[in-house]
Image (cartoon, rainbow, N blue to C red):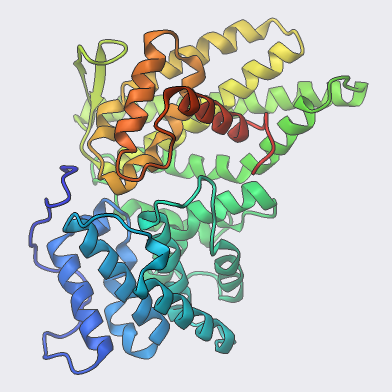
Length: 421
């Protein structure tokens, strides 16, 4: 997909929509607006992975909160498409209306309707997409979303709306558990199956089977990560370890190593099949750090690879730092493996350049984790790349020195070397 914002094409709807009758209510008009945007911009589903949007139009007449949140999303999306000057998202009249409507709904909705969950989910996603003041690791409504999901029955795999809402909230919930701890029930049945079914809808049929192994194991690693972060923090913050902590450190290193071996096997298997099927091509690239780069067009597949990549990079960096801290010989091996994976990661730069500016910044995490492995001109290359990819959202500093320290700071947070913000 082109990263140009005007690249949408009109396609026939392949999803539930409202009848094409003359709208008579506000809900009808908002529903018609959403349907029109989905038809003209199918990437809202395939690229942004917001498949649940196609199930919302018939529900708007039943929920003023959902109606107002959909209206906010449509307004923000239309402004982005028209390349309107970026203003303060939080000061938009439509945002204030949607927020007030949601608060009234939450005060009165004791049963937690699906419309309420859809409204707060879409509000969280709208802020994540369009609020350029939003800070890294920020989760505005996730605690409320978690409470609403916990009050719902477990998902039925046939309920595509509910499964889609859970899938859309997965990233926010994972970030919440990173910060707050707690049991990640998304890896339990039937939540896991609902998420994986939704993920499979965004993958090309040819690569689906092998790619789902990567998606599934990434979910497993996310469930383990809060424990990994806290384990690393307990080691890095104790300069004079007790014998008990030393024993824990050795067992912890073994566990991280086992996870990395499994992640590496899955990643290499998926990559091998992708090359075989032509889903990924490795081509000479004089502008690339290693002189070669990967080219792929399937957005969700590429994003799934990058998610597993950042987790692998984080595992190897943690292993390297822990073995250096304990003066273990394996540190050289882990350092070399980390450096090799950094070089692999940098081959995905053209893919990230090709993403829509709204979501490209979200795919920078692997490059944040790989920045520590850069040397000399590689650091300047990566700093320029981050600034260019982040040119729309501007989530990162523009100054090279400040940006470098920010990337290192984020990497240390994600690997347990600094407290979670």
